[in-house]
Image (cartoon, rainbow, N blue to C red):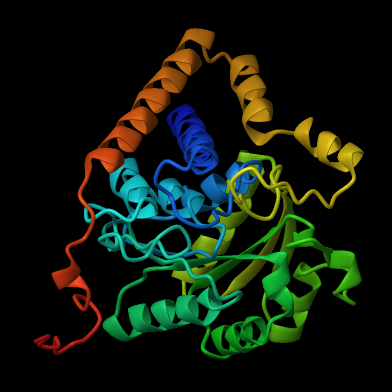
Length: 325
């Protein structure tokens, strides 16, 4: 990673962290986001390191812990925040909400609340690229809980069979909601399962953005060369509960475990690495200030944006629009 890329990695990780903090504040205060939101605080290095290994025209598919993925792929904060607030200016015109973000302008094909559903979607995107004669790659994020879902096995099997250009990245944060992975999976790791589908499988430190970037870059290069898919298991951790439900707390993990992972906060770790490599503290402070201004602007934009008009209810649903009388 060159210095410019490292600074961009820090910028995107900070964008995700500050965006998520703003979202939590809005939910706690009841200021415009309906329902629960799934926060990825603590997992920024895995997300950003993976997305920075892509080209702008490559595809990315996420899952229900959804806000960080499009931000890491380069999506603008204003329409993302507006979507969370159900506003017409959102990336899905206010109809998708927190768990269903999509921004085709940056190759973000969508997030989904159905666990594991994005895996076959990514395989289809990569297969479609081949049919069009392009070398675009599809990056697929999913959690450790999805590794026990049927679509995981179906998707990896087809991707290998077709030598599809997919990079599967499992954000292994150790828990599917409140259930520890050790209680639900017989294999020693998610990455071990790659051998069953004739593809490389590797484990990476998901709190180290450079390690993730290097691992995913190798997988992307392999996929772009027509050599097929790769399964990467990134060991990471979410610092918040499974979801934010206003002020309701659903703590289910040992406090010492959470604190141990907090000591390896990906942003703090990377900041220390950058300072040690010669990056000036003032430069990092400037990035922090710029990101804070971007997030504040996105919140203000979303709050000032209009809600969708009821007449738009069926827009984007049908190839042939319905006539409502």
